[in-house]
Image 1 (cartoon, one colour):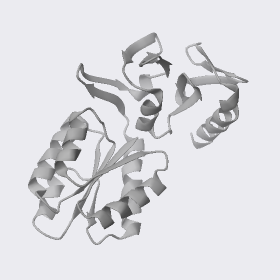
Image 2 (cartoon, helix red, strand yellow; image 1 turned 120 degrees about the horizontal axis):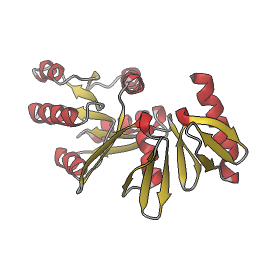
Image 3 (cartoon, one colour; image 1 turned 90 degrees about the horizontal axis):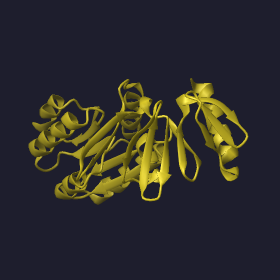
Length: 233
């Protein structure tokens, strides 16, 4: 899962980076000190699940931009950082997950992250989205049975077989889900936990009958992660 932070003040930015990284240790956390850098990163194809956006400068521009992002990606959770001024009224037009005061209270920051994560977990129609030069590709996570790394390609498989091949590393794919639905059982495979029918020593049987290998070095972690998943279901 990718989390982004736009904040001009270096001290506040570093504080947010530390708290977010502690609360979401498996997330890929990126920060910017310029609005243009954020926009360029997203223009280049990066997709974020949570964005912290400061309204210290050009508040209306930031809010308008964030609304466009949410139109393209309804899953996106926005956490604004704002002073008590006219911008505080504008943010509620953009469906914020949380609004933080620039006088940061770390407990409030943690609460905002947990609320965003909870909303992401509760979203019934979560989709995997890739935006690149070829266009926009989306597929509901629930429809993905497993993914396979094939040289420079990532093959995405559903119940009936291959769904799509895209240019993406398997490690980058796993950052989208924060590890709560998919686990990497082999250097070339990551499996959707909800579609596992049976876990045997060094192999996984999916509900559609497909068998995937578990590498010897990953067997203990794969088994432990699957047990945790079953306990939380």
